[in-house]
Length: 383
Image (cartoon, rainbow, N blue to C red):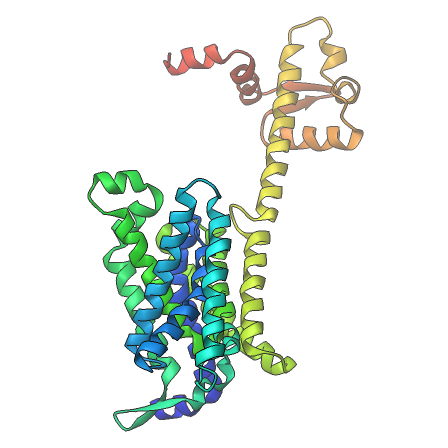
């Protein structure tokens, strides 16, 4: 069974994309919530500097040493960014834009000068090639397993353990660093540990998907999930689900259209973000439009109740409390008047007596709660 699955090229590619997406979304959720999502962009570019430096020192192009070295470069990027922003001469986003191009360009220059013949180049780092991950295999217990699956599987497990074991600490340090410091959670250490894992995940993902798709997986699925829910644990779950769905749908569409697999996976993350932006239950445009329409209808009903209550016992009652007066005195169209009156009757706020519109006890209570709130407070016993 396992041998058949690993021999299935499509399965290996989709699984690799899903693992990269899950690992990236786990750490990306906290970067997005902290407002530091663009640090993933800076880290994923600047760690090419660390990759080259580690190769120059050790002649190793992959493995744990390369992973740790590149991850430390990611932390160096953030440290230099905060150091520069701390001078208050530039803003934080500008500091990011100043630091990572410098480290990235130095890395590219070192590659050109000292590592021309090594299997490290900026094209691979930026774009990767997920379509070929099934070719690079290692033997595990006599079974040939794609190396990308092993590296990304390990990073996914590490990131998952980090989030699960330190969930409370991550939650507090993300939303209230001051309280976290008071509770002894060391928010700075938690932040740098998060960035270390982000950098390590970026390095592990380079061969498979490159920096561009990695950045998309770090930022877009958590952002889409954040549009769907406010619960942290659910954002983590939905972020992983969106990443998996993007990998599967991106691969299938890319094969059907004969286009870049990694590019289509990144596009699909954007499609899911757009869907969440449109149809999210709380922050989606459709939900907000429906909510505004409901509030407008509720205000129209309140206006109708107040109008009828104001003239209920007056001498103008027979002129004011009729449907025709709603058009002349409230400025409503005939269609709006008919709709509001019908809705008021359905909600038991008003009733008809020939041409007259009369308030029901419920409608009268609605008007009194607006015009004479003290009456309602007196009935309920509140001050």
